[in-house]
Image 1 (cartoon, rainbow, N blue to C red):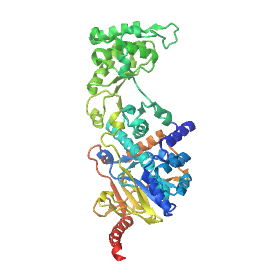
Image 2: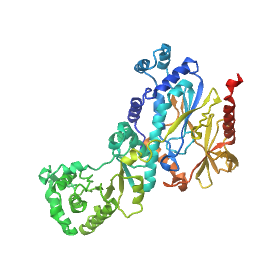
Image 3: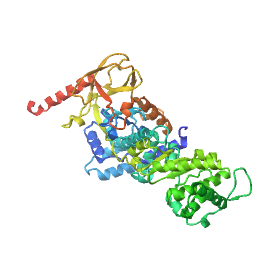
Length: 554
C-alpha cells in the first residue's frame, strides 16, 4: 500500500493538533516549569528517557508504537494566546506575569529526540526514547508523550499476540470501535492493531486517515428489519453479461431455494421469509459484495439455506458472492457444517464460485479462543475481533514512564525505596546483540560516550534484575537501536505510513526466537548494563547514601 497522500498527511497533523494540544498534560508540569523558570534553570540542558518496566500480558516482548504521532506533536507544539490565558486563570495568583510571556514563546526548536524505530520489538527497561533540550520544555512534554506511546504500544502488542495466536494465514478484522474507550481510543486502536498484524478495520475514519483497508458485513438489525418479500425493492437485477432485460431475482431465488432444500433435506416451513427478504435486498444493492450474517434466527434451518439460494441466483446472473458471517454459538462446528454445504452445492449444481466462499467468525473473540481455533477442526477464513482487542482486557496499561537521567551533563538517578522504581542514570546508547542464527539475544544499555560492542568480541555486562551478577557474551552481529528522529524543531527521519510500519513489525517479529514469542510462559529476554554504566549506578548509590549526612556535615 502506498504512503498516505499529502492531503491525508495534512489531515493527520491537524488531527494531532486537535487531539493533543499543549494543554493536554498534567497541571504539575506547568507548576514545575514555573519553578524552573523562577530559579533561572529553565534553559539548562536536560535529558529524559521513556521506557516501561514490564512486558505486557505476561509475554516476552512488546512493540514500540506511537512515534509518528509524537513527532507530529513536537513539530506543532506551541501555546496559543487562549492557552496562556487559561493557564493564567488556573495557576496561583502570585505567579509572575512574565512567566506567561515565556510560555507564549515556547516551542520545540531546542528539542532533540532519539528513538527506537516505530514497529520494533522491544523489551522492559530498555530506553525507547531519549528527549533532550531545555529543562522546562522537555519537562512539559512528559505527559503528552506518555499518552501517545502508552496505549499505542499496548494495543499494537495485543494485536501482535492475536496474530501469533491466529497464525499467518487466517485474516483478521478489527471491529472494536463501538467498544473502545471513546472516539480517540477507537481511532488509535484501529491504526495500531493494523500495524500490529490485523488485515482490515471496520473503522472508516481510520481508512481515510491512515490508508488502512476497511471491511464489513452487516448487522442483525438489518436482517430483522425485514418481514416479507413484499419489502424487497427493486425486485429485479440485470445480469453481468450485459443483457438489458432485468431478471426477476425473487422468482429466481425461490427456485434455487426449493432445490437447496431438496438437496439438504431441509424443511421449507422453518425458513424465515424476512431473512430471505433482507438477503435479497442487500444482494440487489451489492451483488458483487454479498456477505450476510446468517445466525439471526437459525443457521442450519434458515440462514444458510437463504444464503445459498440468493448466492446461487447471483452466480446464475454472473456475480460472485463473497461468503457468510457467523456470530454466535460454536463457531468451529458451525463453520465446518457451512463449508460442507458449500461443497455440496458446488458439486451438485456445478457452481465453482461456491468453492471460494469465505466464512467470517465473530463472537467475543479472546486471545485464548483465537489460539483454540488452531486446535479444533474449523473452516473459518476471517476472524473479527472487537472488545478484547481494543480494550486490552488482560492488561489495561503498559505503564510507560518518563524519567530524568541528566542535567547540565551530570547523570541523575531516582533511588527509590522500591528497587523496581529506581532509574538508570546518564545519557545512553542501546545496542541489540544478535547470535549467529540471526536471533536477538541481549539488549545492551551503555553510556553514550562508550564505544559500541565489537562483533565477535567478548564483553562483560550485568543483566538487570540479576543481583549484580556479571555475564560474558560474544555477539555475531550488533545493531544500534536508536536513531535521531527530531532535531531543532524538525522531523529528521521519514514518516512511515501505517502499512510500512506494519511491515516493520512483521520483520522485527520474525527475527525474534520462538521461545521469546510464546504466548504462555515465554523465556525472558536479557537486558543488561555495560560495565561502565553498572559502575556508575553503584557509585551514585554509594554517593547518595553518603550525602544523606549533609546536615551533620554542616
